Length: 348
Image 1 (spheres, rainbow, N blue to C red):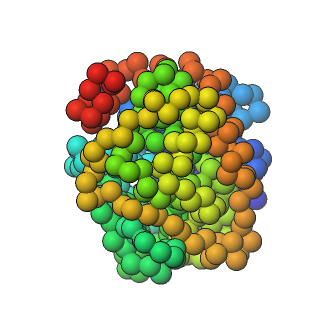
Image 2: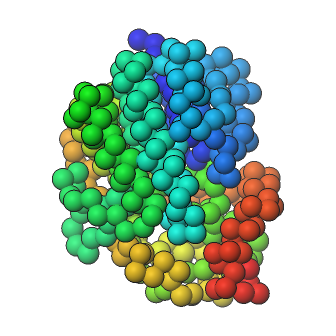
Image 3: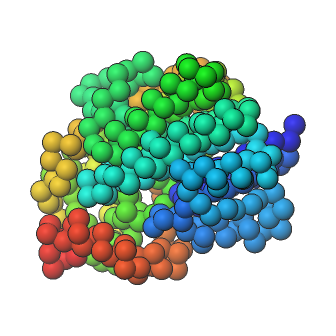
């Protein structure tokens, strides 16, 4: 049955890849993308879907913020939206330390606006994409969907706030919500501020990369297309009001990740610079999520971790025009200088 899906944050990293996933795997669906086109949302990220004659007729894009109810409601009415998948978010921990207020506006109030529109227009399902960081840190074992929510940074707190809005709407109004929580994503079209694209693009330029503290922080990595398939599975098969972890058992320390990147790019250890941890006590030691709930319903990841990482590095090597345009922008250079300048100094 044909459906029209509103993908908020659709010109961002995960959102644009989800648009591609739907256009490829659900040929009877239309995709409508909404994005504020802030620093992390780029029209170049969705250009392939707009140009390709096989997808252009099923893909539409609107600029705008999710906290703008006029924009949101107008799109829903004009496009006759059936589902909403919310990727729109301020999403970088380091930026949240510098500018926490903008995270509240998008990640909490923006979610409220989407929930209100979902209720008002009788949307069939709204899936809110969250993060494993709402759980905080865990020394041993894994987080399940029943683990307590204990965020430790302004970013993770704002994402937890969005989740609580979704839960409250479901309980109070019966709004048809689903929440997914994922590990650290990596893959094509990721804005070069997150660890993997930030390090890869710097290493390609033979610039030093900043390793926080000992580098023994553990992260649970998931390839973006596995994440997209998990979200799509939860949207169509998940129970309303439930939360689902989407992970692929891709745990490794930041130090191990850096070593993998050095090897894939054939770069020397001398390009790694250990620095004081800028997040201090807010830097979670270990993330690890259990995805048995979703897997037990029939979902399974399709991409082996090592092969996906190698493919990702290759993509950045072959698409320098895309990321070099981004890193040349003043706002990107300003962020890097503000956050890393005092640590990298002349190596910036």
